[in-house]
Length: 112
Length: 435
Image (cartoon, rainbow over all chains, first blue to last red; front, side, top):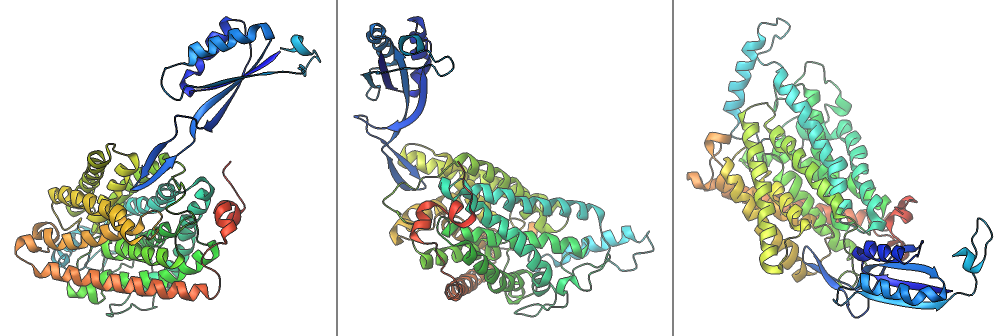
């Protein structure tokens, strides 16, 4: 089992969700986050006071998938979230030791 | 309200007219009588001006502070409404509008003593005195509430309450009497239709002094102090803008053409101010900001305040453009040059606006509108009179504000502790927070 964490541009969420649904991923957790990478920030001006905003709004998607599906999920997210502009985001894949569905008590692959 | 100068003949004519109408009712023995149309309009205008403070100013100000200080900023406007209302009834109204001594009125109307169902104030003979009192109360409220914007994000609530009470007694009450209540400025011929001196300049310079005395916010110039939610400030501006129709229009104290003229000039000045500010930003910073548009609108409104009721509609456009230019300069270049932290630009918008508008009233005053001629109608002395009014207001408000802050600081620190400032005033002063 793998945990796929993707940081994407907020307006790309629907395309990513659609792509993942198409390959059989039926669940995800989305969090509104802020951060920066190579894109850096931007400048905001309020009545002449300039503030450099370093942290830009992004969405963080987490999906837990079987090991076989992980590569495919990464491909789908990459295809859907890419604009080619700086700031498209990143994807991290890590192993999952154990998973459990709280309602039924099912574990591991049955719980995904 | 309108200065007595120049409106005497018109007022008298209107009074005689309405008086004759009322002759049919034997109960009214006096030559003047309550006019129901004037009364209806002034009730509405009173409600409009109260709406300017709650929720207008409360939203306008709190939308521009950080999230941790939103409730505390609203609390300042609310406190001004509750406390100043009672002080106004207690002695404020009487000291401002009863008796025409050069320096101060009398305490004859202490807690409205002697006010009856039929009594009128000489300044507004066609509406009940109680309504005149109530209308003027809303002006005192918003003036005190305006000052707080310069020290937002850092002033201790208890110190703010003490300061506000003192400021009302020692700055607002005398100034309002001097200009509107028969005091030496009004008698000399200084014109201030709805409060360029009494409201905006006095609050603006008071705010500047308070910002200097209390000091800059933690992180000013180095950290991001960007506004929590400018959409609140936009809503607040809308309420202020509409409320200003009652502020300036109501200052005619009658439902007449002069009130409508004041409203037209007011509206046009707000529009021209907003356009000007946004245009400057667009040309110098490549983007017209929403904060810029609302700042320009409020600058236009504050600047037209003393002149409305004395000038023609198109003067409103000119005054609005000048307001946008001058107040933009004050909120950016001037503020940076002298490095004071007037958090919400009370001085930059209201102080500079009130001063500019008072002087422009001396230039554009039109005899056929308000009975007073200005520089453009070959009466340059009016401009000198306006300058005199500005100088007195500046000196009095600045000096008294400084003295009051020093006095309050003997009892309680003006500023919250460093920890409380970083934590936010909502939680440290009021035990609440927006999640």
